Length: 250
Image (cartoon, rainbow, N blue to C red):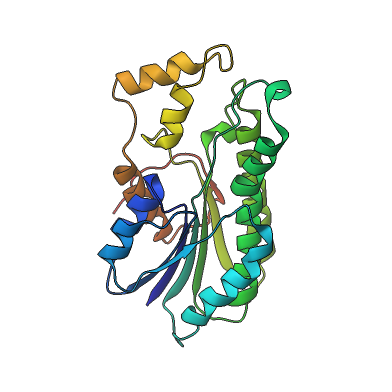
């Protein structure tokens, strides 16, 4: 049995990932603020946790509960995490960003994956099985635009964090493989959000509107398929940052 923990499953890529990962040999653990009843109805064995990733004090209890279920499997085939949840806001010049919005961006995009990784490594340290963490990053970490300083900074930091954990785990007896992945330009709520921003606040908004008009946005379903291929590949974790998400050959 593979045990797979996924954040941000209320919609978008997270929802598509769960739909494609439902399988008799998979036990799925979904985390989002609002439960996704459609997913719950699709898989009776799915465990759903309504949890706010901004609540840093609740992670310990959450992972204690998660691993009470996972520990029932004495010989798991694998234990995986997909840190998918993310927020784009605030968008705009830094002097116009509200303090609470900047803090929330970092809490969801960076702090939550860091804390989840910490608890995951702690709980699986002595388990001899295939262990993997996939962090959903963004090309915005590398290709910078004005008015996206918080999002780009949090994703760049997530890349550095993933590289650091890869180094830490290299000499462990039962290492965790980790990779941050740029999933591409996808037709999700984040894209809808960015297209609605005023040009005064985001000078590059027109190019995002054009991408949608020209049908150049990748679907969440296609993206989920590519992400799962990468997650299951023998090369996962090498390199620890994947900038081009492409079909795995063979």
